[in-house]
Amino acid sequence: MQRRDFLTGTLPMAALLPELINGYSVKAFNMNSPLVQALLRGNTLTDHVLIIVQLSGGNDGLNTVIPVADYSNYYNARANVAIPENAVLSIAGVTGTGLHPAMTGLQSLFADGKAKVVQSVGYPQPNFSHFRATDIWMSASNRDQEVNSGWAGRYLDYEYPNFPIGYPNTDMPDPLAIQIGGLTSLTLQGPTRNMGMSITNPTSFYNLISGTNDYAPNTRAGKELTYVRNINRQTQGYATVIRAAANAVTVQSPYPTGNSLADQLKIVARLIKGGLKTRVYMVSTGGFDTHSNQVNADKVTGSHATLLGRVSAAIKAFQDDIKFLGVENRVLGMTFSEFGRRVKSNSSIGTDHGAAAPLFLFGNQVEAGMLGVNPTIPANALVNDNVPMQYDFRSIYATILEKWFCLDKSVVQSLFPPNINTQLQVLPLLKSGACAGVTPPPPVTNTDLLVTNFPNPFTSRTTVQFTTAGGHTLLQVFDTLGRLIKVLANQEYTAGTYRIDFDSEGLPVGLYYARFQNGITQQVRAMMKVR
Image (cartoon, rainbow, N blue to C red; front, side, top):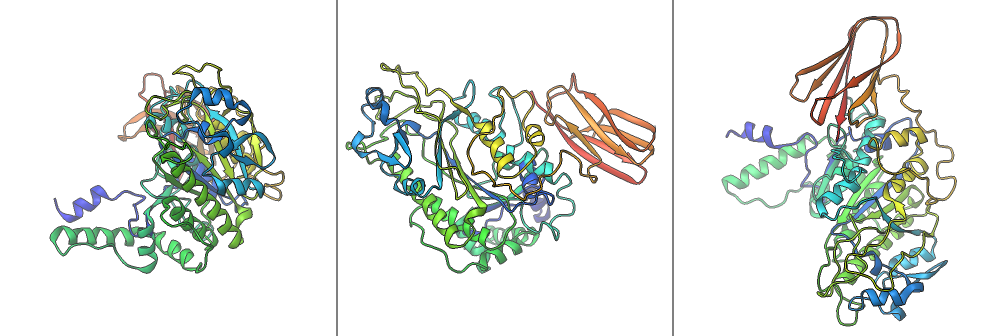
């Protein structure tokens, strides 16, 4: 294979930047993601930023937020892993509930009025597969829906429907979303392309801003690697703005060492303060699949304690840093894990895959304290007993979109998959006035958006709306192979806006394109059919 063929076939549109920040790869998320697009849209006049912290593996919620008021049932259900009652940390303003003793950092944020815990977050009929459950959380879908875009990606796609055409530009010169560590996740995936960029590790970040490469051997393979890295850097239009933002910040408050999550969050704080308009950042840490040896003999220390301690310390350091940098009023953070663990522990001094679990929000604008009550724990818990859901995770997302990113309620509803098996709630998560002075974008009134459809994604039918200037107007539907599926309109129209239903019966699930043509004007709209 020739070098040109190799590069053409392997470098993605939103290229991974291995030379970015502190050893963490940075991914540039695609602008077509609805959440990412909505967050960055010019007519959403807000500078708010969302930090998504993924705890991979399924965090044990009952040992994270301990039901002290029901301690006897808690202890009876998991005596071999139960946190001693006298070691549980108190939560400011909350009685009968406490934190794992390793979470002193989060405890101090509660005391400062900058943290909130939402009890028993989940969804109906939970899935206990790591991969499927993660997809459900990232796509905001039902258990039985296959949705190939993320909730944040769809939001950004709504805000920037024509991306990547015309980007970067003066109004939006920066990435729509940035993920630190690993590959770009489904959360930031739009209907047709990724909406962000990814920084694989912190070392890569610091190499980027210093203009150096990771070591490559002086061999043929090493030279090819160096060549790919150089091409990657040259073709990534956002590298320059990231470097400029990073170099604008030379002093930060301290972070714990030996803590990968802290390393990632330190980069995020630096980029926010450095002036990036990026609205969504995603970071992650793993190891929460604690089937065995979850605790040491003292029950206070052990693998789970180490994980929670690192998360707590990293978030506390980040919050202190953004306060030091003067940007904390702009930033909201949220943790999530694909599921919790079962009520009853197992014989391997661990816990098995479960259902609902607590979720943390942090930031100067959160309404501090606890939402919900301690989960119900049976007096004689059985091996398959699970924590019952109190709050649907999609209501958390909906509240953030409406009350933090300041979208109209009708727009928020449209950004979720059709027929989701929940009624979206607006929850008391944030202080009132977070959107004061912000002008939310109206529901689909962008005059540049000549063709759209709703719902999107859809299951069988969707309504295609188009605005014609008059004269001959053509509206076609193509599949991803470029085949013409249907002609919806091919005639003379008086200037105005029209709607036509598209019935996809008999067509496989997947991506389709509505192509609009009116005189010299043409536009394409991605439409996603799901089960």
